[in-house]
Length: 390
Image (cartoon, rainbow, N blue to C red; front, top):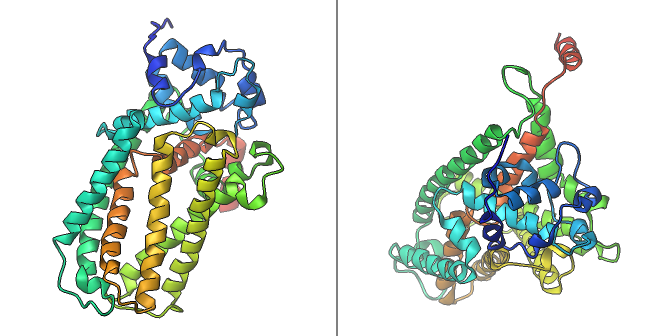
C-alpha cells in the first residue's frame, strides 16, 4: 500500500519535546539495544519511521508507544545522538493530545507558559468557588468542616469526577478504535473467539501495574551506583502505593465515617492515610531530587509538562500533612482554613488534569499493556482449560 509522505508531522512531534530526531537514519540500533522491544513490540525504530513518513494516525494508535519506560539505553547508544528515548516520550505526549476530545492536552504540552498559567488560574477558580460555601467557624481552634462543610466538597468532587470520567472514556474509545483500525491486535473476534481475558487482566493489573515488573526489570534500570532508595521503580512505587492508600482512606472515610466527624489517630482509616501519605511524600520528594540532579536519562530533557504534575502531587501531600498536624494538635491557627481551601483546590486540579496531562499515562499505558497481553487461546490451551473446569 502506497503512502503520501507528510513532512509536517516531524516538526509537530518536536513541539512535544523530541530533540534532534531528524538526525535518525533508521539504523535500528535503538531497537536492538532496547531490553523491552521484541517481535510483538518493535520500538523505537518503527515509531520513528512513522514520524518521518508523516503517518500520524499509525503513530498515535500504536500501543508500542506505551511499552517504553524510558530507561535511556537507546539514547545512550544512538550513533547519531538522535535521542530516540526522548522521541518516545514526545510521542506519548502527542498520543495523549490526539486522544483528548477537549483539545486541552495539546495546549498544555505545547506551551510551558500556558501550562503554568492554566494551573494557577484553575487553582484560584476552585479556591474562590469553594469559598462561596464558607460558614462562620471558631478562630481559637481549627474546625475545618464547620468552615466548609464536607458534604459540599464531596458533591463538587463527585460531580467533577463524573465529568472527567466521561472525557477519559472518550479518550480511551479513541485509543482502542485506533489500535484496532491500524492492526494493533494480531487477531479478530471472528477468527479467535476465545481470548485470554483473565490472564491478560492478571498480567496487567497484578504483574505490571501493582507489581511494577518493567520498572523492576534489571535490564531496564539505572546505573548500579544509584542507591536503591532512589531507583526509579522504588520512587515510582512509593508514589503509586501512597496515592492508592490515600485514595482508599478517603473512600473509606466517605463510606463509613459520619460527615465532618473527627476520629483518633489510631483509627484504621487514619493510620492508613498517614502511612500512605508518608510513602507519597517520600516518592514525590525523591522524584524531585532525581529530576533536579538528572540522575537518569529520562530527566535530562524534562518539560514543564513533566514538572507540573509532580509539583501538584508534592503540594497536595504537604498540605494534607500540615492540615492533619493542625487539626490533631488543636492549633489555634486561622491559616488552617486557607490551607484547607488550597488543599481542596489542588485535589480538584489533579482530577481535571487526569486525562490531559502526564497523569494520563496511568490510563493509557495500562490499557496498552492489557491489549498487548490479550491473545487468542490455542486449541491446546482451550482443551486444558475445559479439562480443568470439568
